[in-house]
Amino acid sequence: MACLDPSDWRGNRASVGQILEMLKDTAVVAVFPAGAAREPGLLALEKARRAYSDLKANDLFERGRRLRNDAVAHVLIPDTPTPAVPYETFYQLHDAAEELVTHLYRVCYRHDQPRFIELRPTLIEHSRIFWDTYFQGMGLGHGA
Image (tube, rainbow, N blue to C red; front, top):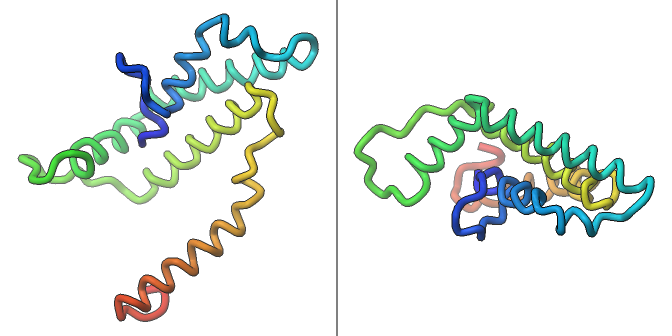
């Protein structure tokens, strides 16, 4: 959720919201390459803005924010029950973050897509090894 946070008055968040806020500054956008290469970046920026606005207006964003703020963040003993959040919420938020990062890569005239996408099979395999090792170490057997 932290990577999807909106900007705030401190201006110190490493989040999509903060990045998009900074990209409202014409001086920042002015460093984009000139000429024909500039148009795809500006189009990607508009797509990122629209996708982020749509995400923030979606109940998905609110469900993830509630779980983070009410159950995970700085609340050690909550006064209210932990909100129920289906697993799909996490995967959908992950997909939204991936889409936004891909747009922002294009804004900065990087590769067509970030490298983490092409490295996904390796990351999944390393994740599988981590969790298998964890479960074995906890005495829970393979993939419990």
